[in-house]
Length: 112
Length: 112
Image 1 (cartoon, rainbow over the protein chains, first blue to last red):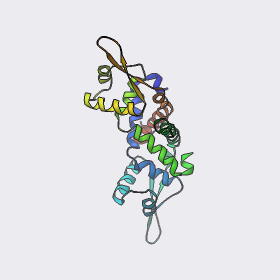
Image 2: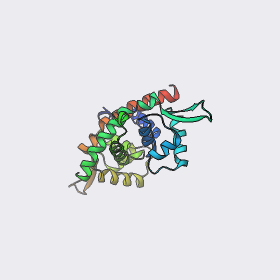
Image 3: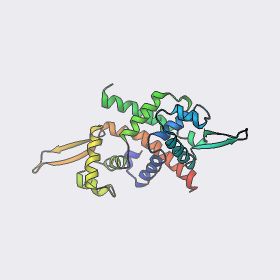
Image 4: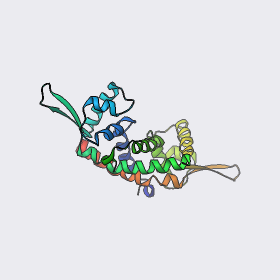
């Protein structure tokens, strides 16, 4: 559809999407949360190479974009866990297509 | 699929895809080329805000990723035009999904 049109409004919504997903951490965090709710320390272990400072910043950005939610549980002491929202889950098709295209791209470029 | 798995290999191919498309210019350039072959100066006019230096750099990167091709025409003097490749066109589904998700995201975030 896109490649038959070149409509500026299409470009705008693609830019919106890429901005919400920018950088390499957000998708990996959403990925880790796709298997279930996680606490900060769990995420920190499951997203290889991320620092606590960056994880904290990215979680705030994902929350602001309504892709994840931060739940405070009434335990003693209170505990916090992060979960993926319905809006976060709505990225599934985007991720699927990126995944398939990424595979095809690797084959095209590296011949593997 | 992705959000049911959390498989590290899926994460890798998504990262490959995002790296090939990184930044805000590449998609806009592919966009401009989707309506037909263009010369450098035409692209420079059709991609608002891009400098000639950045356009030159991005065209090289897109060519290295086999998303566009640079054609030298045997005219006098020789002329150069850029076109989107089949591999570039294979981004169509990714772009469509990003477009739809970007629209939904704007609605979710801005309520518009």
